[in-house]
Picture 1 (spheres, one colour):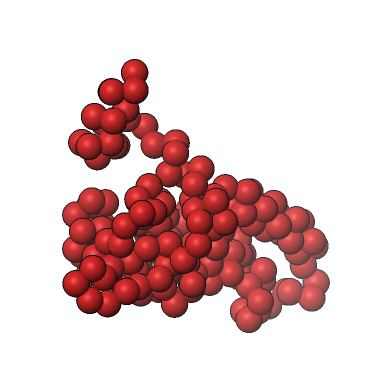
Picture 2 (spheres, helix red, strand yellow):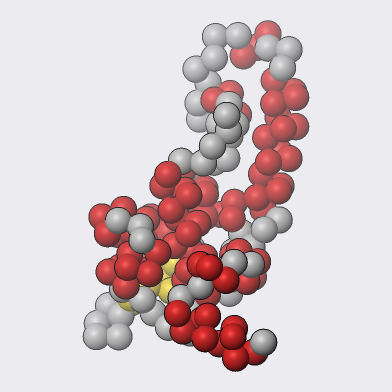
Length: 152
């Protein structure tokens, strides 16, 4: 089974949440409460996404975290890479890892490269803006649900 790490999964949830509210900075406790991601994990993710230049942080009374650039310019692949490193389906696809004993003889390596490239391309083709605007009504915050109901 191919699966994202919990860190990357939560990171996408957090980044999507921030993309839904690009006009304001949010503190780590606010993000944790809004996303239901445990507070320690939220803090870790926010720091990693800031280090990966996905987010910016501001100190002070009006401080908090926000996206470093428009949500349309940040891809899911970038979020994953900021948290987990390069996207690699097998260890031989990781730039610095070559723990495979048959790497030079591997008949599947070329196909793994194609598969890895296809996955990376798919993840690069989805932006945070797209993630933020395709949220089912059941997952909207109460004030967002009211706005949606008012439009209908």
